[in-house]
Structure formats: structure tokens, C-alpha cells
Length: 220
Image (cartoon, rainbow, N blue to C red; front, top):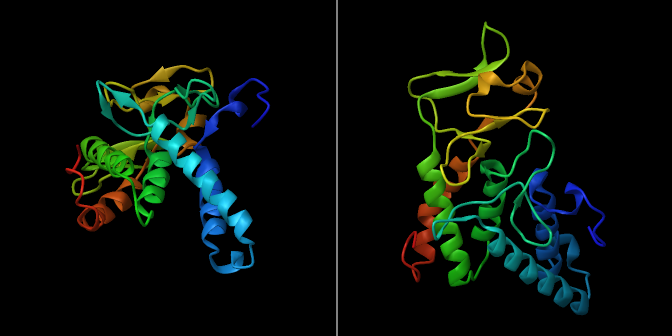
């Protein structure tokens, strides 16, 4: 949002698909897809330029740890582009769900740059590293949803990972951060998608996508 008004509303927002839905709209307009076939070329050109600037922002906000790219936070500071917090229980972190939408968008580009290919490679490597097998996030007799042993289940991913350690973390309404889901309030444990299988869709598409773009060493 511009001009900046203070608070998390100013941030580059990947949360809830906000930025990526705008990017998809701009891409469709720029290419005159389907119902946007009527759009004049002048507007298409402007939309294409906006898409390029958006991709530059995506690449600039990909979290780098020890010189290696990982994934993205839900929100990034509008000025520094560093990971930023949103709601009290949404801390600066590596966010798996929002990163899925970003990677899928990048993988849909017909002629990705080497920088985009490297960004995808790095994110896929991170998804592969952080996947959780043989556990399920479900309702239990003890009350509320919990992470429980489930042989053969998975992979799933935590919603948030600590930047640097890739350790799953969980937030509560009092802004406290925990490494054990059972430590947070029952209201937040029940009312938030702390785990999900979204990154599996990226891993499933990646092998074929990478064969189509062999010009950059895999996961460089």
C-alpha cells in the first residue's frame, strides 16, 4: 500500500495469496488471456512491465541463509524487504504455504531467466529438506488438533520454520513463539493450519519442469 501508513499493512504481502493473485491478474492481462483479449496493447505492455517488477521483488525477498536461497516469509518489510511479522501469531519465518504459490507461479513462466530457475531450484531443495514423514496433524481424543505418529503418512510441512535452523515454530496471540505445538493456546492450536501438504505439488511438478530448463545446474 502506498503511501506507507505504518503497521504490517504496508508490507509486501504473500499471505493469503495477496501479491500472487495480483501477479496472476497482471500476467493474464499482459498476455491477453481469455476474458482479457479485449485489453489494448498499451495496457498489456504496462501490465507486462509490472509483472517484471513483481518478479524482481520476488527474487529480492527470497530468504538467504549462509549464502543459500531458501523460501519466503508471509510478509516482507516494504523498505528493507526483510522478513516481517503480520498478526501476533505470524512471526518472521520461512513460510511453506505462501512459498508454494510463489514457486508455482515462477514455474509457469514460459521463458524463465537463470535467476528464476535458481530461485526455484533453491526453494525445491528447501522443501525437500524440511518435509515431515510418518506424522499427521489431526483431531485427537485429547482435544484439539495435534501432531501424532502415523506410519506411512506424509509428507507434510509446518506452516512456519525458524530462519537459519529450519526448525518448525508456532506462534500465539500473545506474540510468544514456541517449538512445540502443544505449548500454544487451544484456541490457536485448533484455529490455524499449522501443517499442510501444499509443497508436495511443487515436488511433483519439479522433475518435469527441470528437464524443460536444463541450462542452469540443478539446485545451484
